[in-house]
Image (cartoon, rainbow, N blue to C red; front, side):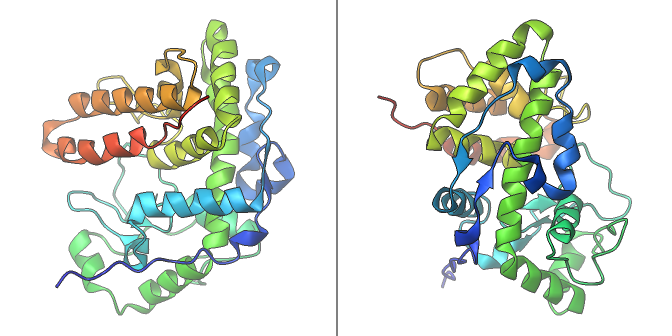
Amino acid sequence: MRRRARSLPLVRLARILHRFTNPSRIGAISGLALLVGAAAAHAVEFPPIDDAEARAIAERVFRNETGGDVERLLWWNRGEAFPSLGIGHFIWYPAGVDERFEESFPALVRFARSRGAPAPAWLDTEPVPACPWPDRETFLAAREDPRRVALARWLRERTDVQARFLLARVEASVPRVAAAAARGDRARIAARVEALAATAAGRFALVDYVNFKGHGLAPRERYRGEGWGLAQVLEAMDGRPCASADFAAAAERVLERRVRNSPPERGEARWLPGWRSRSRAYAAPCG
């Protein structure tokens, strides 16, 4: 009989009141937001995110990444060389693994430390250690490992910090994306972000996509020279009146291109139906 997924209450998220444009609330990754460079003239003003919306965003990200199953807070996909942890399935590389995807879990550990919610003592060091389980088989066999037990408890209990981290990553990513755009494109990119930030659907799309596929600026996050992050989706938007629908369609096209460009041995086509569904969910009716 198939085991029914258990929903995870996102504890203490009612206290989250996060403003995208307040650097003092970003903590350990606030320095990234200083990289606005020549894009400062096109700075984007985000509205405040109230506690109810922050909770709703975090819950939707959690369900997108885990299906609402607490067992998937510690997860390792078949065919991947790393586990995916927490409500955002943050990537953590074992020693010796050096892939093209942005490793986000160590940044979460540092962020949590800066917010007074440190990870378990074996993990809360600097530098943050590599994942101690070298492969999926070892990871699956380590359910009683005290380190894994402590990590699972921390991830369950500190979903509030993980939610703040999701929001902070977007706050840090947007000015970087604007600064990296070609000079003639910066106003257009800023206008697209502003249109998205003006609606709840657009704000969720920004948060979820950055967590899902990154900011798109890392040179290694490319197949055949083409990326698939937030920067590429903003570039691919075609200017239709409804920003969330425009973003959804652009995200789907960018992810389809990623699959076409991906190494055949990765078998990424198997993920495309789910990626399409996730992208289409960003669209919302526009009046």
